[in-house]
Image (cartoon, rainbow, N blue to C red):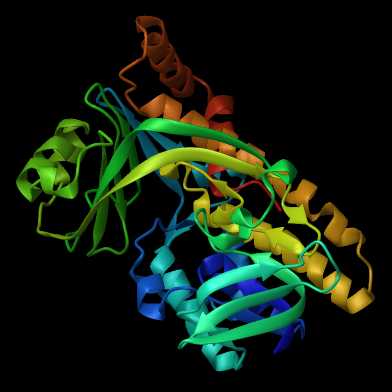
Length: 390
């Protein structure tokens, strides 16, 4: 087989890149090691920046998003029982975010891919990248017991943190930066109405909590927990009681408990790989970086990577110029580090660190106190939350 671009990974970043390139007339194959059902079973966040929404609309995957997505013009930071609303629209000159689950984004992009007729291969085993340091890269894999190989011009590694793409790069060519946080998030998905019409991020002596939603009848709640805890450690009743303790009294009173339809513990880390280009291999999305979910940046950062990479590849195939490929890594990393900073800041402000000194806890108090009195500080938070331009 031969294709112009082989995209490894059929998550939202790989599917969105495939849609943008297909729209530009570039021949792509998406190669995924898992099944479609497995890909859709991964529960992820769902706060979309306007830039991400615009990209989905641009490729024709925005119809259901526009019907079912919930536009939010603000969110609340709840600290030590006191609530502070961040008015996104007023503080940014009209910007907002849209709540729409990442699983639904993936589902829409999958349907778009099928409708386009562009090929996707699922359940590909033993995926291996070859000769990406030359002008004739290849990707081999096993399907139904048969060894297959694809020749291509470009390989796009969109296969996540544990994927084969970044792992194929020699250690001497790659520099990584990482912060692993000493806690996780216990997440519960339940078919109950949300306790507020906007998201609530809560910092409390007992730990962080987040009140989110997928719709007006399905809620997603999180609480900070220890890394050694499991979903089985938290029966539903215990979870709902603990969530209420970490919220202000008004929000706590509005929490409607219900049976969990999904419950999981996710570790938190900040991670960046540099550079993002290795010859004809390009990294994007979680293959290149991880952010703690506190800042709602993971999917949105993948979308901006894909925007920059699609521009570079369209110029390369359409105009025969490699200059855009040469600048992809620097352009993407500039925005990545800014999003990493914001996610780190939100995580540091709102979580309880067992190793924090009394001074560090006072710094958290002072940070929130400053947000409360300074419109400029709140505007900085709002500008980052709705997404920096790309």
